[in-house]
Image 1 (cartoon, rainbow, N blue to C red):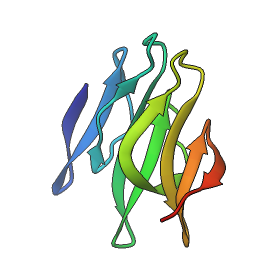
Image 2 (cartoon, one colour):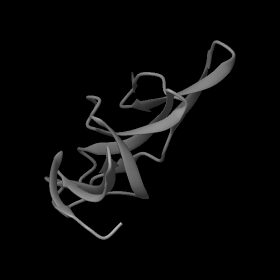
Image 3 (tube, rainbow, N blue to C red):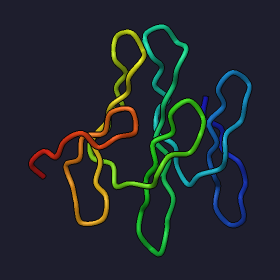
Length: 107
């Protein structure tokens, strides 16, 4: 569930999973669950130095801020692996699996 909170002049959003509230962000994407519902992931956005920064949250801990491409965070059928496309610095079209950059696709 995504809840909106009052954070200064702007509303913020927090993700709530299993009654545990995550940190506040400017925006939160849909929460995606693995096939067995034991794992979850979502994207969070914030403004940083006037630019939009995006992070993929997997099972709770905050990950590294990236430029995410596409809209989908995907779990493997058994829920053991998670993948998404991202960009970092001057690189774009990065394929990230289990937090590791494994390939670069055409931007």
